[in-house]
Length: 128
Image 1 (cartoon, one colour):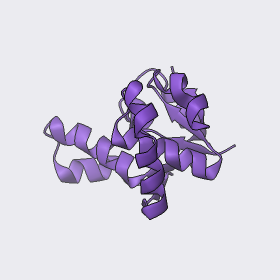
Image 2: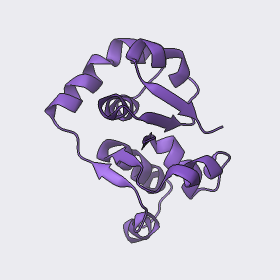
Image 3: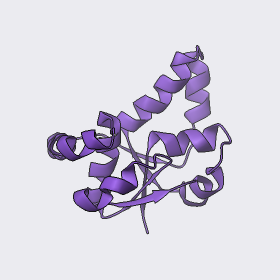
């Protein structure tokens, strides 16, 4: 089974939060869009972390980063009507669009995703 990580999942692993064990179990070879990577970086930047320290924190993670293309952007955009009802961000929709594209499971800490997963035809697994 393949997994696409949401920013919340990777942050749980990096910050040793509940759900870390589940992320650690699937992180080797898991996929993440660079949009979601930007959310992770933004979290640490908002806290005042030095860019070099953020880079060191992320270096060596066994995650495959995927750059969005036009089709993925369109798919994420088309998820907006359903996603807004659940409070999904643009990054959330990119994660879900990538999971749907791959036939993979989206791994997240965001419980709202389960309420719309069926409507978007995406498998979602909560880490906690």
